[in-house]
Length: 339
Ligand code: AMP
Ligand code: MG
Image (cartoon, rainbow, N blue to C red; front, side, top):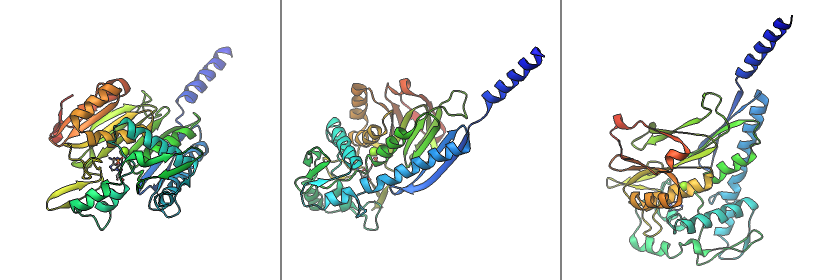
């Protein structure tokens, strides 16, 4: 009898231990892009509750971060003619992060590029190369030092500055998702190009999540993967939003020093970091810095980044080996892993 009970217990344990968690995926459109959050929990209800709560949190950030919605804090701030505005906790926190990363990257990331993004009209029907005089005029209003964070959610924009949080919005949303998790579910959040992978991946023995780094020439395909856990993986690339005029591509990542799309010889930069807002700001900034300056910045600051150059070389900073497993897959697509 004892032996029978022991066998039953063993069987229960084995089936219990191998029981796969149930998953639920919430697909939605927010921040101008397709998003999905998949939660894995002990049962379907737990997974669904978690995924839906994450979706609601991201949707609730739209009025805090969007600059085109007329009911948003940023729209109100941008149209306040320099008056002091009170904003929500989320908007204030995003602005604090934006100013912090602008200073950290020496202004390569700058959240006051709205006059330039408007002028170039990328992703609108009005996309075109502006006159240099227009770019010069827009640049006179650009500079993160024009943002005054006065405490108590009070913000003032000086010198005709206008905010565009497009460079960190999705990272901020990914961190907001991560902050909701209490360990009851594993979650894979794909918020546009920003991915957050939290908890154990039930589909892999290692528990890690394998995230692809897109081939800039065909972003349905990958030229590398990184396996991570409890990290965010964020990519900025010239293939995401752009227009072509006279055979030349003009993309959406601007060099705040020139007012032109950054012409740094890069096609994409991916950053792997525990904080998605930071990774998001850094991908944009490293893209502007270019390969040499970007790699030096990563070495100095301990940043894990993957650079893809226009001449099909792939470089990884030293930190990449420490925070993830990097697998190069680009050889057949004509890329070289230059390390
Ligand atoms: P990302 O895809 O994260 O690199 O963000 C690009 C978006 O951020 C653009 O569509 C602009 O709205 C904005 N942006 C472009 N260049 C910069 C920059 N140098 N610093 C901050 N935001 C930028
Ligand atoms: Mg970014």
